[in-house]
Amino acid sequence: MTLKHNYKNLKIWKKALNIAFDTSDILETFPKSEQYNLTSQMSRCSISAPSNIAEGSARTDKSFNHFLDISMESSYELSTQLLIAHHKKYINDEELEKLEDTITEWQMMTSGFQKTLLK
Image (cartoon, rainbow, N blue to C red; front, side, top):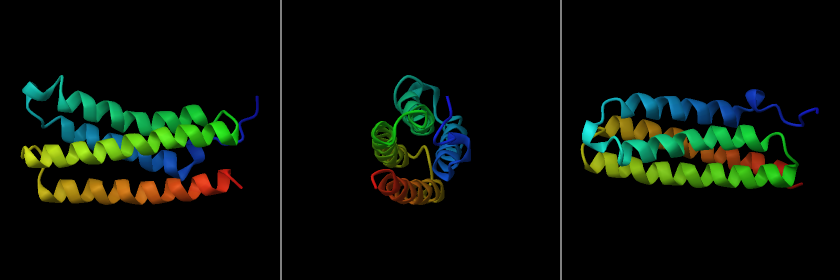
């Protein structure tokens, strides 16, 4: 089967993967008491974004778009969880701003990419 979209060549996949890496690095500093709560939730949704891009890339454009929607939903979930982590003082202002900016940039890129799929 020839892939229409090789996910490893997609800028949105690369950026989503970097968000997952950055999130993972930050989560290493969270208290152990959050291991099964906020840490687990943030890890799962940060991993969900690049994973859904990879999975959807092997499908039709319409189906791929659905997987991109799921990735977007995960990014909004992660943004909310970052605010909670900041409130709990697990991350500082700079970490929050850096990740929020990267997520927003990724969301805009992904939205633009989705428009090309729907043409």
